[in-house]
Amino acid sequence: MAASGSAHALRRKADIERLRELAAGSDGRLRLLEATDRPGRPIRLAVACSTAATRAYPESRQEGVTLRIDLPSRYPFERPVVTVETPIFHPNVFASGVVCQGERWLPGEGFDIFVRRMIGLVTFAPGTVNPASAANREAAAWYLQQRARTPAAFPTDRLDFGAGAPSRVVRHCPACAKGLRLPAGKRGVVACPACGHEFDVAT
Image (cartoon, rainbow, N blue to C red; front, side, top):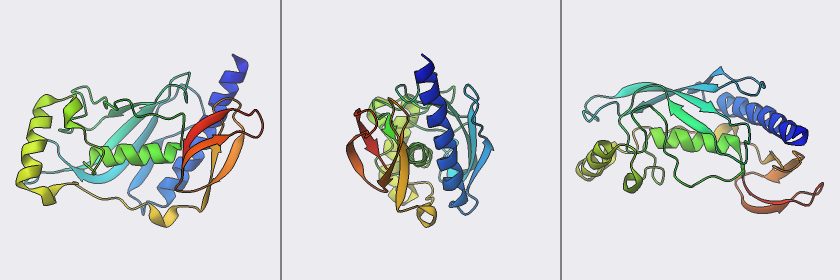
């Protein structure tokens, strides 16, 4: 149990570091409201983006959202829980604000990539919205109709993090927490040189 807790703490610390780097390269559009190394504490982010608050979009827009990310005790083997604290009208966001993430989760996925994916979801980026598995059926029906009517209105915004992207990144083995320096922008299976554990990773 101690080893698992240590791996969780090391992974969380590395994730916070990557999150700070991501925010630094966002030109002020991503701010960390709460992000500490302490296990059990939520991570809260302010994202300066436009999105849909109601079915009145695109005539009426929500400017800015706050995301809350909770890391369970078995993270990274269990997926983070994401809550959109700002009310938005989205097929994959429950009325409570909790994001329906589907089955897509890899323990080796970089936390910065995960956060970018969640930002993509709230801005209706291509490939992130899944109206077939809707948390809000009314929003799903609206989205399909509105996208057909005004395709240029989606995504609702675009955030460019490219300027701050490094050529190599550190990913931690989910079994022993050893840090591995890997090329950025890759996806596949890697073997940890310390413990031999093989795991899927996205950089």
